[in-house]
Image (tube, rainbow, N blue to C red; front, side, top):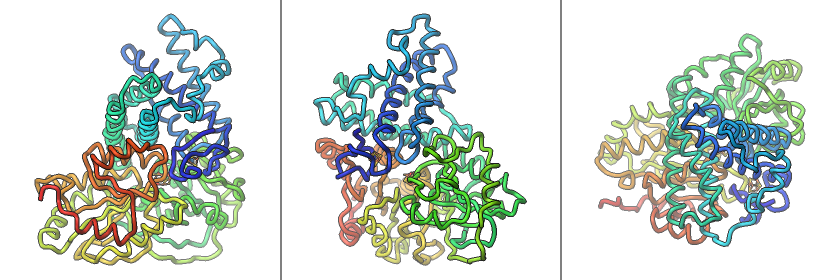
Length: 539
Ligand code: FSO
Ligand code: SF4
């Protein structure tokens, strides 16, 4: 196997023996083959799009590509089912044209055996390191985009142009060793992926706020209540809503974990009195924290880790999978609820610290005039966006230190699971603003971008002229998609950490650093100083 798609890739080069994440060579191969099948399917869907409604195929492509993202699906049987469905879709569409091409006249096994070596593991690269690297940047950004697109579609939000872009990018990737594009062409496509990802995040924002209301600043507890309990993690708020609905009146309390934390800011979700609080911290601490939870655990998306000691009461939903874990079909949580009733639950009430979330797009938009006034009066000197993924690397303590060291006349916006590095620190207030404002999940980078654009527009300047610095932590491919979005919007001087992606070649890194001023994190002190001393571009 060869996989270098995430930040924890082995030796900073690639996982070749087995994945640091727990993905084994068999699963890696099935996922790579699935990506290839999705490329093949994309070209057939693109042809068919001129004569039929391709929505269901486009939904499938996003859903299946999402399953190949880091820490989503480790179940060979479930992934094989997706391969079979992809192949079946290919044959159905080909048959409609009246002439089935030779490759699709084989069985799936024959077809997979005939795939070129370059497909399997992407380890067999072409001779052009830069084109390979740009192609990976595009594919990984596309995986992140498809995660958001898939969530949005589950909430009824779709966009035909976005689907068309996904097809185009997948088709382009299947021609990458034919030198169809030069490096500039590939990078252009990667930035186009960033723009398309902005659309995907916008759709997801519309889906989430349309269903659950606009997030509002809200407190939630890190403690727990006496009684039966279910823990739910991941990003799928619809799964959470359905679980809340099905447990109403049962006496079972529901606790969020990881990226489900921002649910506490959504009016329709926090209205359920048995949404009791948040348990645990970021995804990488699951194996340490989950054995202490006295009820079943539901994983709705990444980041799933090997449930070594608790697989018997771990459930997965949607396109998430771990072999041996029970899977919830059609949002029917009855098995989870039954297990919660049989498990001990919490023996005692334990009040915990209260934390804030819910600084969503509308709240931030409404706060823009006050932010501008505070900036104008010199009361608010700088806004830091410290957000992105968390991960296991010890150097990530940088983010805790960075936030702790931010001066008192600055505020910190955050999003995604990177917040767990500092979410329980008391940063106090700056005038009427809390100094710590949680905008939500990783897809709520949309909120941060919209806020920055609104501030820039009001001041008649660019985002790069604002007293704003972006300190981004990355781990998996959604962060790659968000980074591409920021670059596509011309956002400069981002500080990225904890390491640079292994798949970025020196030449591509040179382009990105020269054009966008992207920097690798150094020390909290050095980076803070540089952010605070940076002069606006227009000055
Ligand atoms: Fe984190 Fe995992 Fe949301 Fe990612 S839980 S690392 S960017 O999947 O998606 O922030
Ligand atoms: Fe390795 Fe990350 Fe790929 Fe898992 S997803 S195999 S940890 S590079």
